[in-house]
Each structure stands twice: as structure tokens, then as C-alpha cells.
Length: 316
Image (cartoon, rainbow, N blue to C red; front, side, top):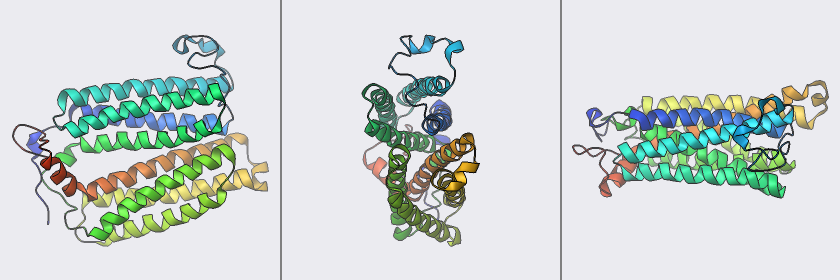
């Protein structure tokens, strides 16, 4: 049974939604660029920060962007673009979004992108692998937050029916556990990429993630109450997992077996970087699904804080 929680006419997606989508898409490109920087060993190709070989980073000559410098400096420029788009998204939220808790999520995104930039700079200045690992983990959190903002500002979220209302508590709990497991997996993945350690933990958590994702998707897809709002992300989740397992297997064979000797470095870089990107998409999709499953609870929490979307109708 659908739960009425709002009105389609109460608001439109508007600029906050458009900017959140644009920022999320640009962040995917940034994560891919960061993966290539690590995979190609270009992380320290530019030895200074926030300047680039003494230049203002935005004025560095294009003619000098060769080899590893191209990948590292392009990564910095993309990071700056994502930061600028994040500020625009947050400003649009504070200007046009009357749900203050959503606007505060936009402010949190600015905080995360600043932290992310500083972590990347400290990795260069202090030459500590720990900063590279934390940098990778914060990137996943930032991307997931931007995708969440895209969901929360969408017309489908603001619509008048909640199709997940009859989902059991077990499914909701499983969705949260799945989110947690996937993020733990990204942490071990970052450790493995930057240090070569904890392959055992990475593989173990990958098994747990696979079990949870397939189990959760099966419960939702075989259920009678979940409709498009939950079934679509459930389908995307298990499909992404299959792709991720394939990329993970390819990355393992390329980096840790003799098969890698017959594969070009660029092929290995594409496999490992793709593995990072799909991991980010998997994490973000699991959060989208969890949001959908907990939509009614979020609505009631928002209503208790008197956070209406418009002057007419209260929505989550």
C-alpha cells in the first residue's frame, strides 16, 4: 500500500537537482582520473601544492602537461571544478530549498570537498601514504553525499506516493548493513591499492558484500510491495556488483599473477581504475536504495522538525 507523503505540485526539482546531478557526474570523472593517477604512478608527478611547479595551478602552461604531469595536474583541475560545482549546489539549496536539513547536507558537501582537497595536497607535501588512503575514502563519501542530494531534490522523491511503505524491517536493516559493508570494502580497497596490503580482508569483505547485495536484491525484486522506487536501484545494484566482480578479477590477475606480464600497463590501469569507479557507483546506489526504503521514516523525522518543502505541503 502506498503511503501518501507529499504532493507533486508542492515543488519542482529545479536548479539544486540539476546541479547535484552535474556535480555527481563530474565527480565520477574525477574519481576515474584519481584512479588513473594512482594506477599509472603519477601521484607525485607534481612535487608542490597548491602551486604546480611554482605556477598558479590555473595558469600552468598546457604545453608542459606531459607524461605523469598531465594526469596529476588534470586531476587537480577536475577537483577544483568539482569544488566550484559543489559551492553552486549548496548555494542553490540555501536559496531555493526550504528543507533546512537538506540545505545543511549541501553545506556538509562543501566541508567534505575542502577536506578532500587538503588531504590531496598533504599527500604531496608530506609524502604520507596514509593521506592517500584517507583521500580515497573521503572521495567515496563525498560522491555518495552528492548522489543523495540528487535523490532528495528529485521530483520522484517529492511525489505523493511511497512505494516502499510495506517493505519489512528486515529489508530495511539489510540495506543499511549492505551500505556499511560496501564502504568497509572501499576502505580495504584503498589500503590495498596504496600499500599492497590486506588483500585477504579485501577478498573476505567482497564475499560478504556479494552475499548481501544478491540477498537484498532478491528480497526486493521477488516482493510484491516494492515498485519502481526500490526495484530499479535494486536491479542496478546487483548488475553493478557483477561488473565489479569482473573488474576485480581482472585487476587481481593483472597485478598479482603472471598473467599480468602479458597485459599492457595501460590495460591494467584501466581495469583497476574502472574497479574504483564502479565501486563508487555501487556504494552510491546502495545509499539510494537505503534512502528509498527508509523514505517514510525520513519523512516523519523531517515533519517532526517542521521542515516543509513549501508553504502548503510538508514533504520529506
